[in-house]
Length: 212
Ligand code: Z5A
Image (tube, rainbow, N blue to C red; front, side):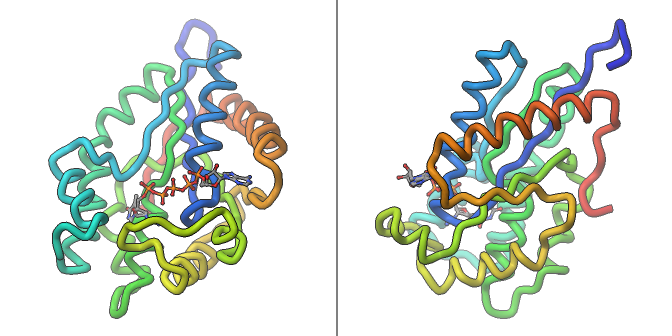
């Protein structure tokens, strides 16, 4: 970092299929960084607390039916609602550890009939871009060994298989792919080292814009 200036925070996004361990690992990472006195916050998408988040929550719990395009735009709007706050926090030096972001948005919607990846990417173009995407890679068969999928709309084997295919299609060389089948502690250790490296390397770099 340039001396006299606050180094910006890193924007680190976790992605993966249901039950791959995102919640477990994002929480572990935030605790580990806090114990190293890193200024850090945990966020997750969808943010079910906002106006759009409440509709999304009801949709996921099968409370309301919505057109596939409409709900896709709501998930994107739910991120746009936070975009300004994300930029401000990063600029003020706070590192953000984020449980799902726009890649989930694309991969889940594009798993539906008649929806394609290009159309799904468009509404998220222009959002703050992650400095790193950490992909917790887990086969669906292994995810299912972690207990039954839940009761929510997308928590079904066939659908999750399509979602995983979409993630593999979207993956770029810059993604950090983690073998999520290993014990929780081993994964957490690898991720902590990786995150410290990402935080150091992006302190002087401008935040980029997604898909532009
Ligand atoms: N969605 C969308 O369609 N469009 C969008 O734009 C966005 C999301 C952002 C809700 O997401 C749904 O919204 C989601 C995608 C869609 N639908 N699905 N599926 P969410 O984030 O609220 O829910 P989730 O991602 O499904 O979270 P989850 O079920 O909590 O999964 P997780 O966070 O990846 O896993 P976990 O809770 O850390 O772990 C699951 C279990 O496995 C738990 O019992 C752990 O103790 C256990 N576990 C974790 N790690 C291990 C290891 N290493 N070994 C063994 N067992 C483990």
